[in-house]
Length: 270
Image (tube, rainbow, N blue to C red):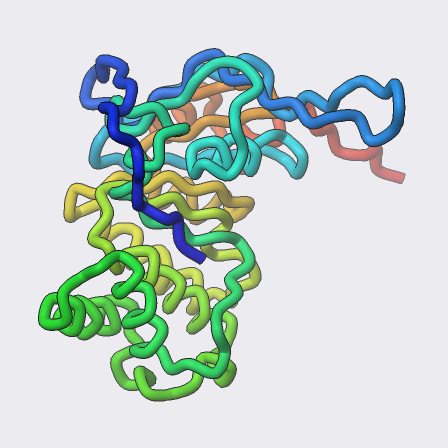
């Protein structure tokens, strides 16, 4: 699944002045969904979120299920309009298609044409971005090597393992050479080897100066890879900061910090 990058706007997209090379700026974001029945109050998924993510950092977006992570990502990707507030990518309002021109996106549940091979899939997405043939073939070669699938490039995707499907998903998210990667649970359901390979790819992208925003429940991976994190619960931002600073402040690892912040308490021992 890709974020379409075309725009038909004839006027320049609205801009906000970026602070400290902020790639993403979220200002007072509120996301509400209509009540399910007549007369029912709307469900508030995100409550006045303010957040900045800077160029070249790996940023972990954390929270329990239902915390508002996916709703926030969907606003950035243009899937969900904000109820109130605003969000900007590289100074452009996310409601303008041009703001998403330089984004790569990997959803939690990948769903590709299983009758295609890896190279055919990447060629398909590259043509959607109108990448020239020679440049596209060079990108396909480089990306398949990056995600360690060059030897399986002619195999049908339906024969791929879960880890291989995640890696071809990363490759398609990179086909347009984006500056910003948005990854939703990139290591979900992977075995330790699969998680390690995805982590290595994220670290490689970070070393290239790309900005990586991802949500994850794999807190050990987040602690290893991320420069900074934000934790939200019930749509509200609870903490944001550098991983090393938070570990030093709380004197515990990220998993225990997370549980403390969301208010989890262990059941009493019998």
